[in-house]
Length: 339
Image (tube, rainbow, N blue to C red; front, side):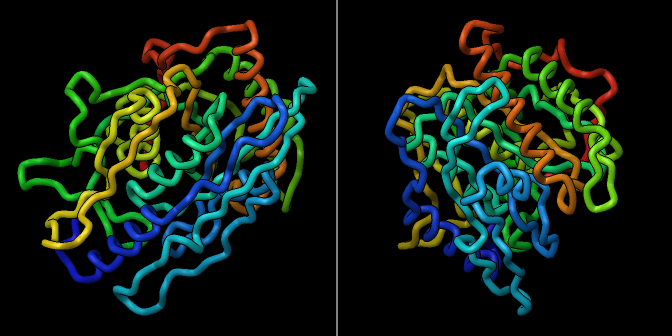
């Protein structure tokens, strides 16, 4: 992280303190239900409503959407803790299966979101991980086939922190020690099963009206999104790549939230890794239309539930999960700035 200014270093120290003190809130419940981890984002700077956080809150009611505001004083710390909401629920899927869901609404902060996810992964041991963010106002949902080890040097939701890059580079590495062979990494999903179930549910929801808006006018299809895309190197990609990397490398620790420049005698990075072997656990990132921030939260939760149901059903004897392959990417998907 570029911590050259005093304001950036103050925000960095607040994020590091919270990351290191955080303990998982989702633990393995009693019983034999399968478990799913679902994440969304909360406020982004002065944009108070995030569609994915609202949808996660509709799916997991105990994860109440964090109603926060940015600081009014320039350069003041925007504390991460109030921007996080985590809870569990037992969800009845369309197929009739009941699953335990850990819902997380995350601060839109570089690396910190990944660290919080990793701690919940270790404690909750899920059978599926579904991460979510927003893109254009109205669009299909994009099932991201993969992610790239690149972070664009843009400020996060704190308006203070951005990845540090060298003068001759346009991007920073997310996982500094990852080999060149892992510059791009595929997600793991039963792609056709999930795509088909999502499309069917979108058609079923199309004519629902909420807040004067027809669901199908905001979200009308599902597409598989290729990787790497130059437009997808912001915070959604940061979470996708780092979480996938940690899940695929049990027992390996990496340094996130790396300060640049480091301060002598201070904490200048956060080591994080997973002991549990989650290499075979399906994981995906989904981009949603931003306009769902103010309407159709419960319809979005129903679509999320159908996606979860389809993947878990596939694990029980259907289409086996495979690494995301660009051969399946929608040819019309051009991407765009996302967070």
